Length: 144
Image (cartoon, rainbow, N blue to C red; front, side):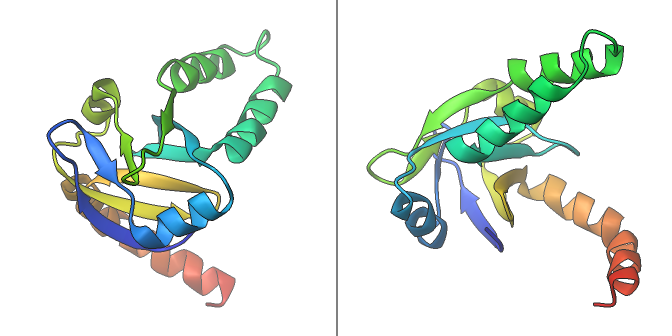
């Protein structure tokens, strides 16, 4: 998945998935997803199959020997929530995750290949401005 999409949450914290994304997602027969706290203040939305890959990676980590790994697993998994796409193409964002990502109403959906990121619009704009120099540097290193 790629691209960015601006949307609004409704009063019940439901997010209407853009038709372009919904068609890709539903074409594969997926209507169940896992939503969790992401990095840099966004939310990560994974399909069931991608979430399975994440849990396999987590299970392979040596958690008994590393305090940081145990802490990461606890936070990442404790904030995870299964969500379903309803008949209108919406998903419900739990209140605790909206608070984590500072989401009020305006959001930006970002396609990041294997998952979607959900950002509060204002937070996305701040982040994008902050990392612009890194973007240019990495693009140059990659020869893009």
